[in-house]
Structures are given as C-alpha cells and as structure tokens.
Length: 293
Figure 1 (cartoon, rainbow, N blue to C red):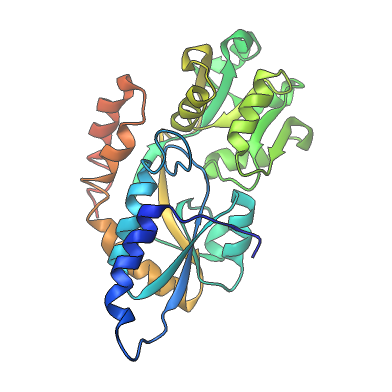
Figure 2 (figure 1 turned 60 degrees about the vertical axis):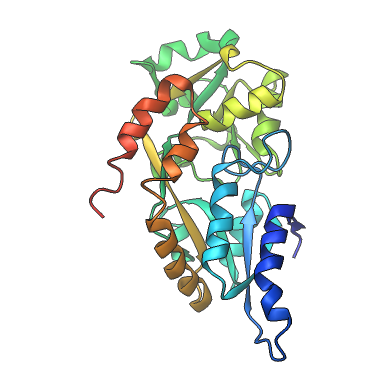
C-alpha cells in the first residue's frame, strides 16, 4: 500500500482488549477492516516528542474506534497527497481531519462538521515583515495582490486544502509563486526552508506553526502571522471516508459519536493549543458553532 504503519501502544492495547472475548469464540465472523489515515499534524495528531499522543485527534480517534466495534482497524501514516489518493480509491479508508471542498465531495463521504478551528494565514519571520507591509489592511494580508505583484514564493503543503476561499486564491496565482512540499513533515520542512532564506512566506495554521516553531527550538515571538483578507475566521473539520457503501455506513456511525463530543469536549481540547490570549474568545465563539443543529 506504500503506507507506513503506525500503531501507538495505547491504541493497540485498547483494540487487543476489546477483541479478547472474541478470540475464545469457536466461530468468529470476519469484520471489515477500516484503515484510518493519519499524518503528523500538530496539535491534532502528534507522533513524536514529549507531547506524543496528546493531540485533539489523538484523543478523539480511540473514542471513534471504541464506539464502532463492528470493524477491525489499521492505522496508516501517510502524507496529505497519499491520503487523498487512497480516499479516491474504492477502498475502506477514513481520514479523521479533513476540510470539506466541492472537489473532495465527489469522492469522499463526509461527516457532519465536528470542530471549528482558526483559519490558515500567512507566516513570515519578523525580520521579513517589511515585504508584507504594503499589502496589509487592518492587519490582514491581500495574498493575491502580494504574490501577483512581487517575485516572492509561498510555501504550501501539496494536496492540502486551506479552505475553499484560500484554495480559490491559490488557483488564481501563477505557478511560479508557489512552492509545494510533498513530504510527511512538510510544514516543518517549509519552516526550515524559510529559516534558511529559501522561502520568505509560508501558508499555515498558527496553532500548528507555533507548535512546530517551539519544537525546532525557536520562539513564536520571532514570527508574525497574518490572516488572509476575505477569509472567514474559522474553518470546520470533518471525518471523511471513501465514498463507498462501507464508507458511508461508517460515516453514519461516526456522526452519532461526534454529535455528543463536538460541543462540550472537542473545543476545550483544541483551545489549549491556542495562544493564551485567544482561548477565551475562541471558547465563547465555539459555544455557538453548532447551536442550530
């Protein structure tokens, strides 16, 4: 399959314990195997370091697995491009942290939205702020004008969606303005390229960037983050499965589990990764995300 297996011990132990009663049965009916597609995406999934396994999805996924005992499971670590390729195939695969787009909706069955997160924006080192300053309005950057009128390159993760609004802006830009990274640790690599002067601009999520900057031994105070003009403050994560009979059945079960978590549990798990001065405002906004449902 080309995917690198990932089985954190606590998940393996949980699955083994849940399967133990069945191992003694003389006739165990084979279950469908669901492949969860994961990537190192702090603060949602954290594979290494002192905070390994403490991300939002790290906490959510065992609850999804426990609440769906009718399946066997495998966890696969893949980059974003490979995950999208696998979701396109007629397989039984699911991704627990996807943004909805019209393109993806053609081949992915999406859950209801389960978590509002701060939108992506432009990350620059403070020593390079002057190149962005002429394109700011109320501290929001006009990304299309910035990249259309300069020779700067913007680092992005290949096949990643940054929201429908941002994706539309990226499609309108000349290809020479964009540097795509396909690796498993793409954002960390882009930040290293920025530090070395090979890139001045990186597109990313401040909650993720802050974590990675600190992991690389630097201070977030050395960076500036600018929201993109015309882009909403929040984006919403979904679980997505291959759009097959199996995938749609799994999404039906996922929705039942998420509905009880998305208002009371998940916002708090996410808020602790935000800048301290953002947390209270986010939690207040999060109270209203799903009130109409």
